[in-house]
Length: 208
Image 1 (tube, rainbow, N blue to C red):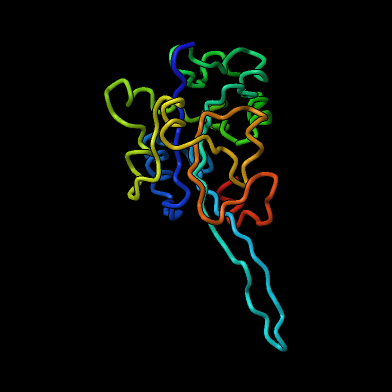
Image 2: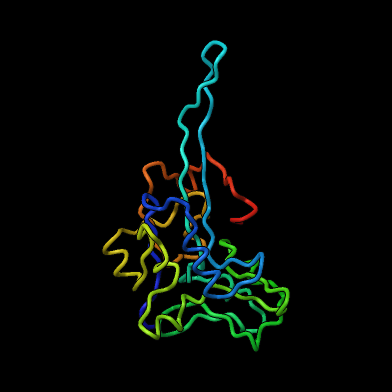
């Protein structure tokens, strides 16, 4: 395989504005309930009693922008019974061949990131394609271009890791050893990991 494209997300810059999510949804003309990129709000903390008062202690919130991770070990590809889901040789992007997809949703169940999305009207699975058409025209992926705080970047994953490090384990995402995702995160000052998660997702309906 050639190079492996990946995403970079700076959790310290992300404000949860969802501009990346909106840009993606608009560009792909996605129906209600289908989102290729989602922004997860992760919050933790507790209350400490002081006499009759309860005082918040250790409260934190950060946001994690999540799309398909175009994993080195994509379980969606492994779980697809028709070969519709595949990993492109030249850049490692995980794509769906709609002519082969039967809408069985096995890929959706296999993916720990919820990246494959079922289009009920079309009866097939759909997902982030890393804006391959835009990249072929010399443009950035629309989520990257649409972020007003420049919290997103993309490129060859080895170059991203050389530039930003190799952290890929912010809670509430699963342990990266499961699929070896092609993503790098710069942690927020309060970032927890999958093994030290002590918070909860606050926008479950829109993010999961």
